[in-house]
Each structure stands twice: as structure tokens, then as C-alpha cells.
Image (cartoon, rainbow, N blue to C red; front, side):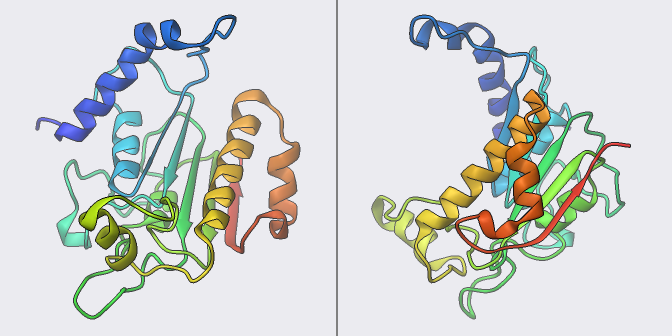
Length: 222
């Protein structure tokens, strides 16, 4: 089966980094592609998993994966291609550290006419369950699937997707963005640079985050 276009395009972008990134960087800044992470949100989160799993053959290798509220489809019988979720714990053959960040309101409907944006069985819980250690799971409890976007999104479609399609939190979106950003940086510093202070601090005291974190789990490699 041919990979979906977004998976193929993501692989091409990754390969572009090998030659295209360095000329665009400031003087005396050198890209280190030996520590390369792949990440995405929503369907892009699943795309990141697909790229990391090798569905798009790339010249570069990835050292870490971060899924931000990844979604595999609208229901278990309607997973988007390729079908990577098997319903089996530890079935994803990822030889790298993985962090999966979910939204507490993602599985809830915004209204009676639209399905949840991150339905149970297709969301961060399933992705995390099927990961192998080392892997981490965090849930930003009071926010929804689209709350990591900008406060204002351009165009009518942008506003509808951002404000109406998904169940949103009532707090400032800035708190969601800062929380996700902090989690990603702390996780990558720990896994790629062996700087564990911030990551361990968050695991030990989730109240350090700008907004509420629930169900934090970190499973180290054995």
C-alpha cells in the first residue's frame, strides 16, 4: 500500500533537513541531526508516528518522537491509513523514546452534531498504550484538542475549526501552549541530552506546570 500523501511529504521534509537546513541557520550555529525528533498534532501526530515507524523511508534517523494529542481516526472501525494501531500493548515497533501529550477535553463532544475531535480508542491513550519504553504520557486536563492553537486563527474555516469543531477549555490558551512547550523541552532534554532535572521535577510535582496535568506516566527502559 502506498503511504498517504502527508506521510510521504513529511518524509521529504525530514530528508530536506540533511542539506537544506544548515545554509539557513545563523553564522556559528550548526545543526545536529544526530539528535533529531519528529512531532505532530492531531492527524499530524499520527503522521509523526508513521514516519518514525518507517512508512516513509528517510535518509535521516530520528532519536525521539512526540505526539501532541494524536488522533488515528473518528472510530476504531474508521482508522485512517496506514492502520498502525493494533489494540495490543507495546505493539508499536519504535526504537526511540516517545512522549504522548493528550487533552482532557479531546474525547468530549463540542455539540450534538459533531463527533469528538480525539475520540476514545483513537486518541493519546491508545497511542501511549501501544508504545514501548521509554515512553511518557501527560494529559492537559482542562483543555481541548484545538486549544494549543493561536488565540485567533485566520479565516472563517480557521475560526470554525479552532472555536467550534472541538470541545474547548475555558481558560487562556497561552497556558495550554506553555504547558505543552515545557513538557516537550523537558522530555527531549532528558532523553537526548541526559539533563533530567526539569523532567524529574515535573514528574515529582505536576503543579509546576502552568495548568493542571493529570494521569502522568513515565515508563523507563528496563
